[in-house]
Image (cartoon, rainbow, N blue to C red; front, side, top):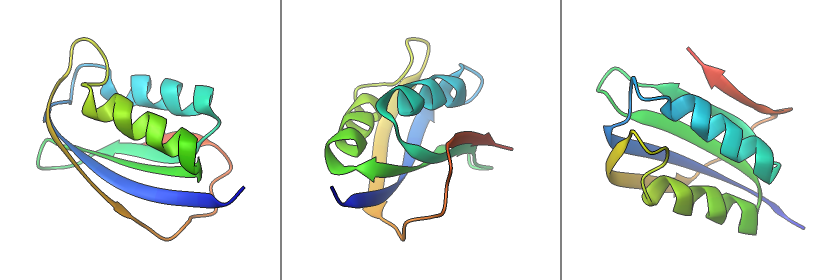
Length: 92
């Protein structure tokens, strides 16, 4: 199976609500690698690498609103160069 890599930017009330932790949990359960981190503009960046179907599942979860205390207004995404990630981390 080919590995794909997608970068996504999640906008809304996504900081201070456990968004990165929940995203890490979802990504790890799907077997994805990459990272998530808060950005200065209040959004969250998510880079996900793995099988297309699994990446699509995480992207769909993000678009559906992520964790229950978050409010996702929009998710922008684009393909990105695959990184050399060994797991899925929270970056600070």
